[in-house]
Image 1: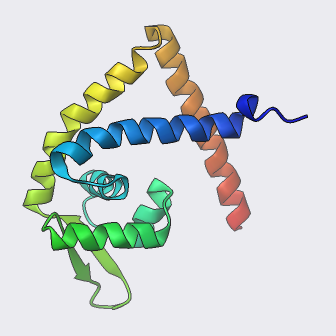
Image 2 (image 1 turned 120 degrees about the vertical axis):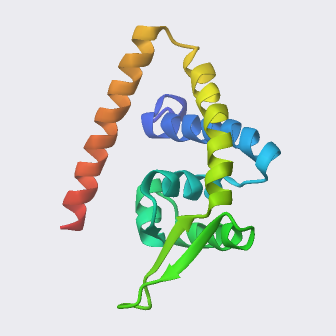
Length: 149
């Protein structure tokens, strides 16, 4: 019999949702950003100019959510869109200086949240937790790559 409360995929989903929602309270209250908008900004801050498809794959979010978030961020002046001259279907996104400034203000808040969250664990447990997460992410990435072949 499947005990949902002990089923790892369920537990991971609940944990990820709770962590994401708690962190969202931090940047939503101060900066008015949604979870999708934060993920787009964070990805652009780390990757400069990328497509909606690239963001969608990296942050594991529906393309429509990424597109809506990008449209709103463009309206508020936090990102800019540029159409590829060779293939007009491809649109690259990048942070504006205003978007980069917002990201710089969010980073210490996000890192403080991460420190608080991991504070429930000892240092060695936190290190092990990160190692396990990285291994599981790598395992799921390998599975996804094999599924695409």
